[in-house]
Amino acid sequence: MSRTVVHLLRHGEVHNPTGILYGRLPGFKLSERGQKQALTVAEHLADHDIAHVVASPLDRAQQTASPIADSHRLELDTDERLIEADNKFEGLKVAVGDGALRSPKHWPKLVNPFRPSWGEPYLAIAHRMLGAVQRARSVAEGHEAVCVSHQLPIWTLRRFMEGKRMWHDPRRRECSLASLTSLVFEGEQLVRVVYTEPVGATNPRVTGA
Image 1 (cartoon, helix red, strand yellow):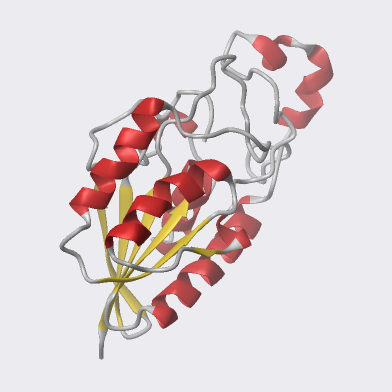
Image 2 (tube, helix red, strand yellow):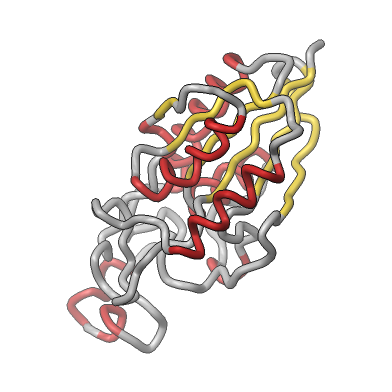
């Protein structure tokens, strides 16, 4: 059986001066620091056997993926299934004790944290992400692939593939900016998950994804 590695890469830091949950909103690009993070990850992966690079259609993911594709002389592919999760609080400030969560009109959105009621169901996220990963694994069979996505989709898929419940405390996500969650396959079987932080750890509670 061939060994294939699919790296799930969270994008770099985003320029978000107003501190909103930007979700799928257009126009949110990498900050200067985020651009440096993208270059650092590309350098980290320079000696890897990367055969396929694919990203979410959102600007921040495309910008993070581009240096990797360029360094391996590959065409950057796009997969809609890697996109950020849909969220009813998109465009609002949602920090605890601040913004939208203080308004009673938004409280009905919080009624079911297990699905969750405020956005795309965890199971739907896991299934679409799994489809994207399986395609990347097939394209890069025997080599390595990089899929650039977002914090919640990556963390949800990891928990799904490890057989854990998908509802969770967002403050405990192990998915820093520009981090790699690497899925190691033998044939079609997942045998190991490896987590690395090429640019160091960041606070998972920071608004945005």
